[in-house]
Image (cartoon, rainbow, N blue to C red; front, side, top):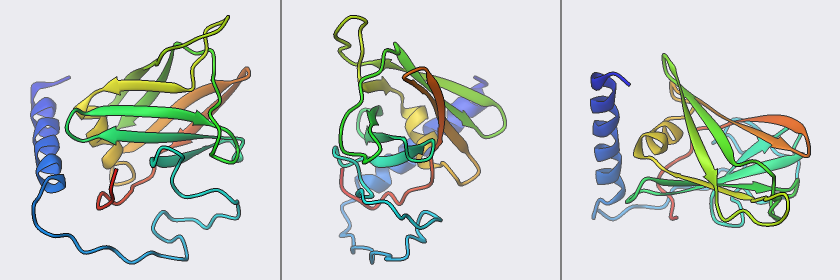
Length: 170
């Protein structure tokens, strides 16, 4: 990664952390009932947040979902593979999941399976400590294209991350 891009990403991380940790009181944002915040209406019956309080990404025609959570302080990004209702974990036999972030050049991030078990080993949770990935995810849809590749039961899926407001609680 070019040195100037590293400085840009580091600067963005510092600014985001400063904004997240601001001691100024924050006023709650109104809840949009037309789902215009993320660009499309939903006709399904699951929550907008996953069971771990994270953001949801659709896979296929809502066959599965990815929930992603993050820790601003450490840069830890965690993905959970969920069922069609976005409520139950779905263990898969992959050693890692790949998130691709593209501004000009594509950068791939490999998130390792967390505590895989069984034979063959499977996990529904994948994680990577990467402040750069966290910045890319927070900039998704704002000049940064971010997607995840997942294989479930032999079928390949690609999910697109969308921009989310950062004024929420984790």
